[in-house]
Amino acid sequence: MSRPIVVGVDGSDGSLAAVDWAADEAALRGAALRLVYATRWIEHQLQAVRMSHEDRAGQAEGVLGAMEERVRSRRPELVMTAEEIEDSPTSVLLEAASRADELVVGSHGLGSVGGFIIGSVGQEVVAGAKEPVVLVRPDYREDPHGSPAGARRRVVLGLDVTDASDELMEFAFDHAARRDVPLHVMHGWNAPFFHRHRAAGDEDAGVQSETASALAQAVRPFRDKFPTVKVTEESAPGRPAGQLVEAAADARLVVVGRRRAAAGSHIGSITHAVIHHAACPVAVVPHG
Image (cartoon, rainbow, N blue to C red; front, side, top):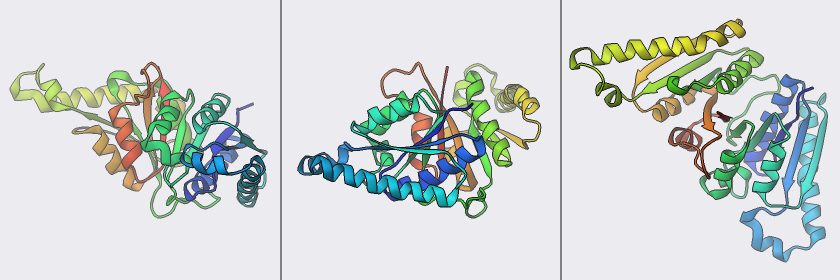
């Protein structure tokens, strides 16, 4: 049996969108949904000092009750639990993620989980989670049948062919298969790096051919494993982060990786840029 999908909630617009995403994801996976509320939000420490324990408990109960009703109206078939946990957001979310298939948080909003993405707590959650973390913006909406607003249909995967991760590709292919949407796999390469190793006359054409071949080879096993997924591949010179952010304009999800071996709160410059600038939800998948 699959582990639950966990979503961090606080009642903000960001967490409303995250709850919707998480409920749909749990339904598609046949998994339970776990709502968690961390009482000691760092953004409200001074306010928390002035509030009694009963006041804080009442606030948490109200938020969790509203989120439970939202889920029931959207996905009444889900098995669901809701918990208030007296601890810091980082501790609550990392502990919850350790026992989940996926952690979902809102990516913006004052006082929301996602509001910390630009600060130390968000960096620690994304960098420390051992399972995928999905960041959902408050302005992103899907109906309960999984149809996103506008023309957002495809999943975009950012892949480094020199360090292709099976975990990263498994997540992206599986998501596209469950949602019955196309998958676009992108690899951006830095031309000057390769130029040092090739003769001037055939640099661009040679590198383009090599990277396209490496990308196709990395993706091939997953094409075979997920034959129903329509896959396109793109290998092009340029800044990978900018390419992924541009591709996010018409995507329903961008999938990027983070190496588990990275020290501290380092999540990689490409992943960092995509988290901050992509217009659609972002899944950060730890690997390695």
